[in-house]
Image (cartoon, rainbow, N blue to C red; front, side):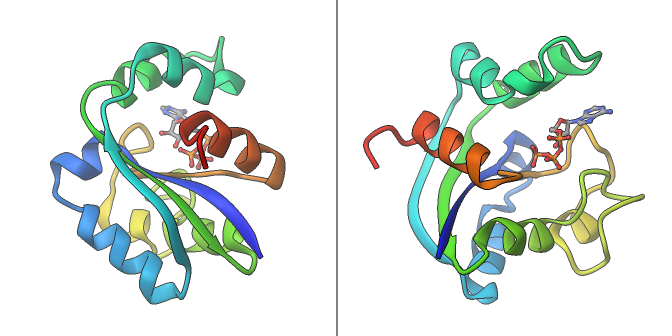
Length: 135
Ligand code: ATP
């Protein structure tokens, strides 16, 4: 079994898609280990997206993720990292996300693609410790 960090980004919360995302996690058969609705400060945001520091869209990414409440979740199951990335769909909601995925069905732009998921076991560990230090 494996754990991954899932976020419903501010666009998903403001569009009232929290229930939709939680429902898809549950329907896939994954387990919810922790759930927390919170507003992210700049420090957490820059640590979370450290690998993108210096890229042209970094500032946009930080201001977006801090713009309103996000739902943070720890999700568990067999191959949870890949399973969640399949449920979420590819980063570009039009070019990469398959129909039937969250992004493929519900998003239009890469900068506001509704959800996040850790991309590998090492980043999942790092992100879960960052968002849920008491877990
Ligand atoms: P996430 O980490 O949010 O699950 P991802 O792993 O699919 O996304 P990354 O390449 O890690 O994609 O990019 C992180 C986030 O940065 C993306 O989800 C997207 O919101 C944003 N992003 C990535 N590339 C661009 C871009 N070219 N323009 C604007 N935003 C981008």
